[in-house]
Image (cartoon, rainbow, N blue to C red; front, side):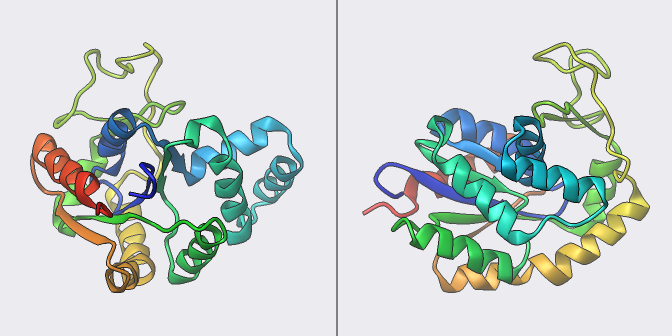
Length: 223
């Protein structure tokens, strides 16, 4: 870890359990959770110049550029919430994006401590995805079978209703997995060459996955 701070990212297909473990990581290590969707929504809500640019792009159906996302990461890194480091989720997804992230960190004399891969067979993911429900404001995820809320359809923490993502179905999953395998999987080799790639079997009990995640973060970069 860099000066007691942790700069890490989670890589894995949809339904691999990244969201569940992200909650644990944030609580234990005090890092901020930088999920691409959350950052974009927060930027729009802030009414900043960058936020207004994002709002216009999204309103016209355009794709937010890599440079804008990197800019949001940079801005978030300067906030008190990220004083102990960050956990990236949803970015980078391509080699080009990874290179832009490296440039951002290098400009601050920092480097990524760990790129943790949540490895799981595609066949396991359909059941996981189709039973998933999300708390929109926090990103907390539940599953009707594996991690049900205390009250069906209700977030345990806030009591607010949960929602189901429209693309959480088998057909959409197939498309998302194709994109993951073709665009994101090359990141494993990219980060392996940098010595920061750690592969975890995500098809295991949550507590076992968490133990493996802690082992990675408690030991990575330590001298």
